[in-house]
Length: 245
Image 1 (cartoon, rainbow, N blue to C red):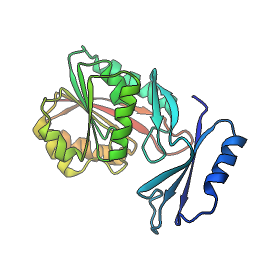
Image 2: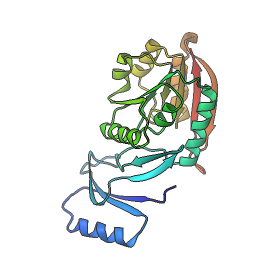
Image 3: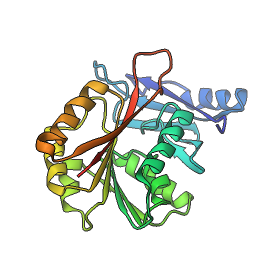
């Protein structure tokens, strides 16, 4: 929406001559390009990004407008690929939850706060959990930039942090990777027992598997499910499932 672009080169070797000069040349040539980064990945694997990313020209992030907020996106942090569809899904989630304003919401797998921050504006307190420390840092910066003060972000795994929160969540939002939730996370959710769970998934097979476990013996009831076409012309579909305890 802002039109900004960020270029990231993934290389096996950082010994690239005059890359900063080339980066500045690209910045001068393409007005919408705001930064050039290089990510170091020397490993032979199907993982695209390595653990280290450096900015060689311009700035290490681009700005995107989402749900009335301005978010900073870095190359090595997660953001929804379809801004418009993600907004539609977010608005549906807010409508379906019929929030009163006094709830505590925990956004597990929160990334840079894509859903956490808009939800924080609708509730009394929001907590984001994310295993990637760089994403937590970005989420905190996004909260600061947008003047949202009733949200806290914690770096770590969901199964380790969720049981030890100082306040019991009324609602837990799940947006795990394609592989879904681990058995440990499912067990923790059944122990913490929030009144409501919203499970966002990009893979219906793992969503069905996890919903079956959450609803085992009638512990949770599946009340509504909404697919969203985040990936047009592909077989992939995003879903939001709503559960009540």
